[in-house]
Structures are given as structure tokens and as C-alpha cells.
Length: 338
Ligand SMILES: [Zn+2]
Ligand SMILES: [Zn+2]
Image 1 (cartoon, rainbow, N blue to C red):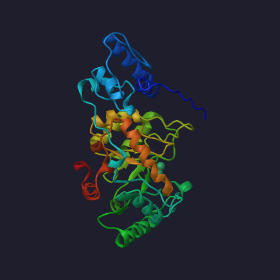
Image 2: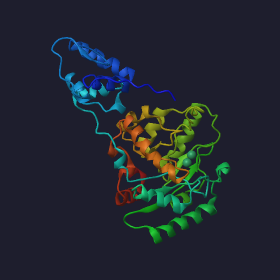
Image 3: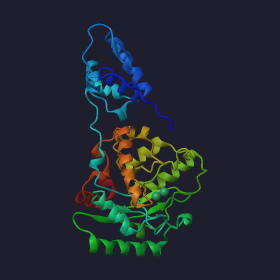
């Protein structure tokens, strides 16, 4: 890995910090705003007449009549206008997360046991952990059939009786395969016994956009599907996602009150950060999920909070900021009341 080190004076530091933070698009827009004040701006400072005193980045934005723009939002995608109007959101922080859904154990393709995952979540300071192992149509991931899922439900209930309480509990779920026609891998009666269900596409990825979109929408219309897993199935640096119409999925999530996951496994980061602002404005709720396949991967939640910030998400847009008692009540609501 190559790394550049640049030493600048204290006076230059806020300018250099902002310049190298980027993005280029944001910097270009900020420079043209400076020009309207009669100043030119580069990575070392302002030049021109009547220069403002700038000690940090906040001073720099203030000099241009703007609220401080958090680095994650600097993309020239509306943040400068919002900073001008004083309407930048208060962004979510990692410390706001109280639990998480969509995690695997050794029952399917995870490498840590149920006990280890629960212990890891507790150590991370979480109040709840949702277990959602694969379903039977993912045999490559040792997906659970009806019998094994029913047995896991019992194990989770037993774990909660023995170790759970008002400070921590496990939620029993499933990462249910969305079959080719949009039906689900388990019947309604079994899904209804779960605390939550994540619906994901894992096979037959070569459908056209229209067919894939209809397939996913059919799954979201199920009253038992709490949330949609990794929307596009992309693997960053390895394979693009399958084509899917984001607008239609977002509209359907809003209409059916289906949560969309922000899968924060760094290989995925799916749904992509560029779509969250729109989803949020439509009232879609997010769940930041690590899709952890080992106890260490619960740490991905921290990346998830960063990506959620990049998507303009606030605490109230993300369901797993709810404390345990609140999320328990929320999960019991019928979808249309959520
Ligand atoms: Zn998956
Ligand atoms: Zn998964």
C-alpha cells in the first residue's frame, strides 16, 4: 500500500484536511461558492481581500455561510444546499445501535456457535442479536430445512430462558431464500413462528431486471418478511449485483412497511449508500446488519454506521437503534402498523 504524507502549517491544516478529504465534486462546488465571496480557495487557504480567520473546518464552512458538513456527506449531492439552509440531518452514530439482525451460526455456514455469537454480541454492548441461518434452498450453505429450523427455535428459546433477560436476548429468525418465482422457502405457518425473517436472493441470479424486481417484490409482500437482505447480491471487487429496479423496490418497501437491510459486510455494503437518502425520504426503515458468519464479524456494524451516515440516515431511520423493549414491541406489530 502506498501512502503519502504531507506536512502543512497550522494555518493551512483545515484547508488541506478539507481538500484531501474530498470528494472532488464537493470541493469544486465549495471553490465556486468561495469565488462568489471574492476569494479563491485551494488546499493551502483562501486568497483575496478581507480574508476570514479559519482555525478548523467548521470556520471554513462558516466563512462561506454554511453549517459544518460531516465528511461522509461531502459528495455534492445536496449537502451544500442543506448546509446553506441549516437543514443538514443529525446523522446516526455507531453508539446508537442497540442490537442487530441477520447473523449466522454453525447451524448453516457460520463459523461460531449460537453461544459464541450471543456472547460476542453481549461483549459488544448490544441488547439483542437476531439469528437468521440459511434456508433449505441454499444447500451450499447447509441451509436448514423445516425440522432443523424448528429445532433451532427451541434452542434459542432455551438459551433465552437460561441466559436472557431485560438486558439481552436472542431473536429467532431465518434468512429465507426468495425462490425463482418470488415465493418463499418456508410456508406461512413456520414463518409466523419466527421473531423476524430476512428474505434474500441467493440463486437464479441471471434474470432480467423486470423479472428480478417482480420476484423480490412478491417476497416483500409477505406479511412475515420483516426485511429484505442484500438487495443486489453484489460482491464488491468481484461481481456486480443482479439488475434490479431500486425505485420500485424502495416504493414497495415503503408501501408494505418492509425494512431494507444495509448489509455491512464490507464485501457487500448493499443496498448501496447512494439510494438511502431517497429511501429515507419515502419513509423506508433501515436495519444495519453485519451478516456475521463469525463472532468477529459483528464488528462490521461499525462500518455499517459509517455507510449509513453516508446515506444521510438518522437514528430514527434505523430500527436497530431501538432498545430491547421497544424492538420487541415493534416486531410484534403487524407490518402495516410499523
Ligand atoms: Zn445472504
Ligand atoms: Zn446471510
